[in-house]
Image (cartoon, rainbow, N blue to C red; front, side, top):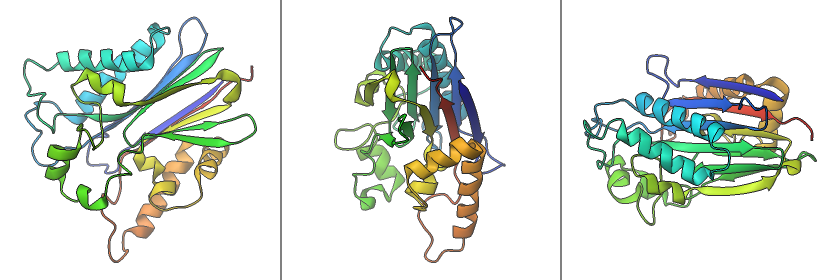
Length: 264
């Protein structure tokens, strides 16, 4: 098995709000990956004393432990438990009902000799490569289906779209949001490799339209996750002087986890 991971902040002067891990159980049977992309709250912290990196570190740590130690429990249940555990760490000091409480997108994958399970919540992506080289992007596309005009104002997003029916969902303090994730299971023999990407790393395809998901995974496999992040940074720099400017950050935190599974 080959595993590689890279995570880089969009701004060296700010903490990286992403989280990434690969968990390999002591039994040697199977493993898991976890990728979170922390949501930067506009303005104040929304009634929470803690930073987004504090939240993603605790949620990611809980998910890493649970996906390895409870291999028979479905991923939806594990996300629910991890959210409850993380909320319990700051419920006494923070207003977790505030729409800007720390939150994150989630990608989980867990593999065993029999299957590969996955869970995707919000706009990070999981790429799955089949033995014949076919690449499928497993995504939660609810955010993509919203009108761009609806996403123009952060306050409007927070009050009317985020974690609301007809909008989109992120992992914050409510354990029930786990049931909103895109989930599934594939036979182990149908998966050769996995790549989990936060949207900052997926920009090569989604924002700059350079190649497709198969090209993206080929770059990761051949040159490593660092090559994808470096390419995204080059595209961002070249795009910085574009007129009119694209909406959103010039640079974003970018994380890639690559797992090449051993042949069965």
